[in-house]
Image (cartoon, rainbow, N blue to C red; front, top):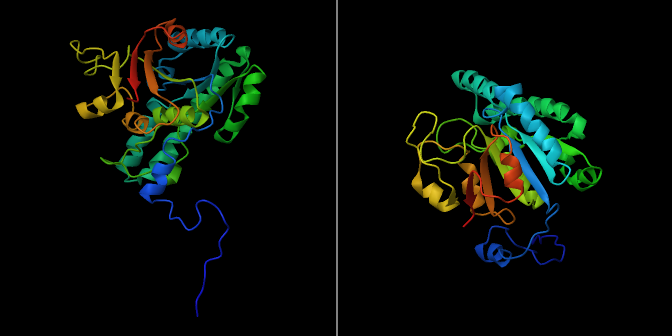
Length: 270
């Protein structure tokens, strides 16, 4: 007996959705940019929030003032508590997906604190499911704040090296900017940008002001100021053409970045 597939007529009818010819057909098709004037600003947990009020409060005031002229989505990292929970989890042999679940809770805590600090400027904590509400929220004059951990959780991909989840809050900020078609993705760290070596322990380290994602990956550096998944994904981005890294400890640096002035380091798609 012959059993035929029940089909619904459409241009993808009968396709496997992995055929190269099919995929290339849509390679140049433009995507809708949901919030094209949005600036995704990631506040690092390890580089900014963990330093406490002396670093974070001046940055909060700067963001509040900038919100009068620039649309921003604030994304928070995890920091020292992520290192602690990962240390325990790795020691216990937890799977990578479980480690991702545990680490994600910390950036959520930081999002709560940052949204409260931004409350005088109409800061509001939002969740991943609220992203499609951003146009309305921004039109109401609020500063949305969310955690940066991407929602892979237990479905986190195995790491190419070791067990630490490869998709963390830098990656989450980039993915948010990409899906929303944002104007920019800015990562705030505790250094002036991307360096040839860790500038904290290597005084001879040189700042790399501008570099392509492929060139950065080809250098295969021992350490990076951002997650390696960001330049890897940037190569295939459809909306975001660059990611900028700036020093969140220096007042006025974010202002320069939002004005389009030269500051920090920029990693370009090509």
